[in-house]
Image (cartoon, rainbow, N blue to C red):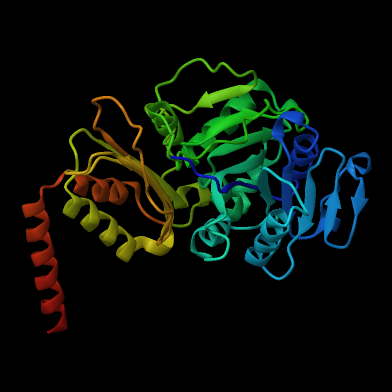
Length: 375
């Protein structure tokens, strides 16, 4: 099986974090291929003049073959227009990078790629890359919840301006990022330069994905030396500094404490009724606050496991892993949410260890409670 849709990378990060510097490097990189860069306004980008070959009101073409275009109307129309021109052989690109504004919430863009009937058949999300300014990042996280959300939703965090920090300061900043999102990889940028290809292939939602790719995507891989120069590797699940506890009344409340994450591993295949009950209940009760759900699930009676991913109540189509090999039938699921206690998140995930009869009894109990509330 092969997914021929164009991969899309969402590039986000707070104001002044260094997204444009990273873009300028990216479109110079010959190994990156032909990229269509989509942004809100071309005038805000600040691309180097020597990269520009031809420019119009809507598109900038570059000698590398990359192009940039601005969003006209909405993202769906822009991507549909790009694809139409590609199918007419007017444009050629291998992937799309969407650069958000500094205060953008990545969630609606991720949902657009799933629910828009025009673009969903042609594009797939390849990963969320968040640029974090190491020099001012701690203060930004203190004052701007959007910056915290951008890190919480990232598959990869690019640390910029690390030369302005001492090694202990950098360690503390990385620990804080890990406390917000322990599943995201971290890479250090050298004035916008990162190891070739590290920004791409982040999602495990593809048919040919392997076991290592899935555990890496879920952030559940065991700590190991990183073969790529500049990468700090995956944050370890055990021993990773947790997000700060909720502040006492009258105390300063760090935005970090609004983000909670939890994960679970279930060694035996999960009954379908149990999985459906868990995910339906979680979405019904906490849907608006779910930043991301992702996992690999082995369901009783199914020949292959599948990987799934969701933002709030919107989910990508689950991908069955028909090439999966090995005897490991462990399901692994990660939930990242806002304004939801980590204990509640973990308790929700523990539902996946229930048996179908237990679920039926719990449903009956919930129905009785609902009836009693009406009277």
